[in-house]
Length: 363
Ligand SMILES: *Cc1c(COP(=O)(O)O)cnc(C)c1O
Image (cartoon, rainbow, N blue to C red):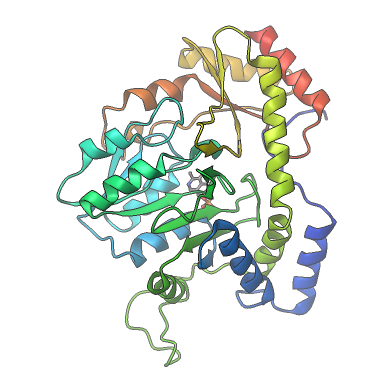
């Protein structure tokens, strides 16, 4: 009854009203006013000219790679610590996944590691703004410019995060967001690609809709996809988007409460925020010094016994048998000692107090 989940969407009157309106309108598939509105407002929010809604974040990443012309035989550099979808999208196009190490402060891709991994076959970098903290985009863009590489931000976990006051999604060739149920804001399932490049936007919309020619219906000059978002998803997404400031502020408050309790506990580290960054704290991160994988799993089990859900950091992509091994020390180290804690909008102060007290007891 009293189990505290790690994540849970905040669905209010506005969400119910918009979705109801969308269903009643009859525009239940991928045409409708909510899609246009959601795209328009989301683009403005990220400070870009265009946004293209997709069926989810993974299809968004895939579509962006295809539209940028990345293909079989090319190499794409990604951080070793990320959700698997970053790597899957690269695999879909037959390109080689090159996993590199992360920085221990931001948990995001290390610019130095990118430099060391570049070969003549490298075509793109996908920095991931992990757990709500942005990657070092200034340095990454500099490297990309020097070597003539595309940069696609995987911003699936970082809606509203900022680098020097500029929002993610507008800091490179394209940004990709996810609106899965546990993300900063949700549309049920859904994704969004942001860009300032008009040609790229046109290509994305073309490929998203079966690559059907605008001038000639049911005529196709290449293989496209059905990666469209539905008007129902967009209705939920737009309602959530209109509350994004409220939701992010709450996430930042939740983090501060955790910090107040846990900051002085020995051997414990929480999320970092660089001086140049705004972290949206998608998930609260707890790292415990000298924790083995066995200890970590026991810790998670003990929390569960106390009615508290938590989850380990992602495994390094390079650990999976289907990907090449890589020498990524920081990613491996962080992966084994990191735990994510409940971080959702409706979490109460009492619940956070209880979670922190439980953590201190277990430690
Ligand atoms: C969630 C997530 C994705 C994929 O998004 P979906 O909408 O679930 O397909 C991609 N990258 C990262 C880093 C994610 O966290």
